[in-house]
Image (tube, rainbow, N blue to C red; front, side, top):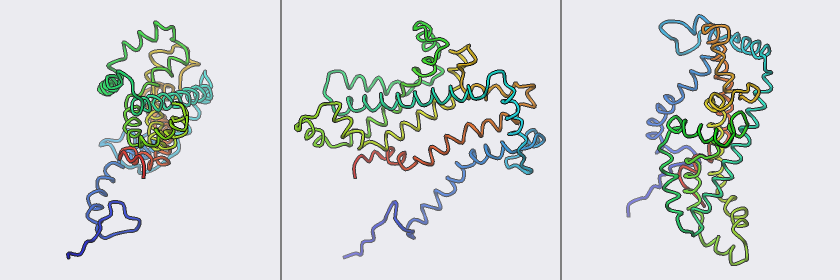
Length: 290
């Protein structure tokens, strides 16, 4: 009988069978790492390197001048920088919490409950994945204006709570939860919300984390909402303010501050993904239970 040697896709220790996979994936990983390296290098470039021709990818003489200029500009702003930070954290926390809560509830209903029209509702959600935000900008503005939400926090929060991709991923993950667990809970007298809270949520934590990351990324860097729905400067968010730095004084002087601001806005996204990356991988693999 031929000797069988098990090949591990994700071995606990180094295995020589993985060398060929590493040789393929390592160059790809380095290539995908280049944009992140560029963001860090760009933020520390002095002015002459920012406008060097031909452009330089790596920084030669790193400096903190861009961050000093950014700090001076924000400290002399008519609206305190703390106000923009407060608005951003309020909008981000509320939107991420609401988006995840709505998506998990809807995913549970579409996956495990029986009612007419649930297939149609899921198809509508899948169709919404094809539309980019720019394509629905005018209808969204008309709805927000008709509801009287212009110049309110709701104009920043409500449009971003609906995330079709978040609902799709969580629903697909919820499908992996065995129906026998839910049926046993119903036999014991549990209601729908109890099943959702005590059984579904603990088993779909990786999907919840992934949805939170996707929602955070969408809200944290959102500039469009503050631009189109808000005219009161005290209600605008930090991404909008950072986006206006290239116009502070003049375009040339603002490039260094914009580079530093880009790094400041990028770091929270990177940190959150690094912390929760294992959950993202599990969600994409649709591995509900082990």
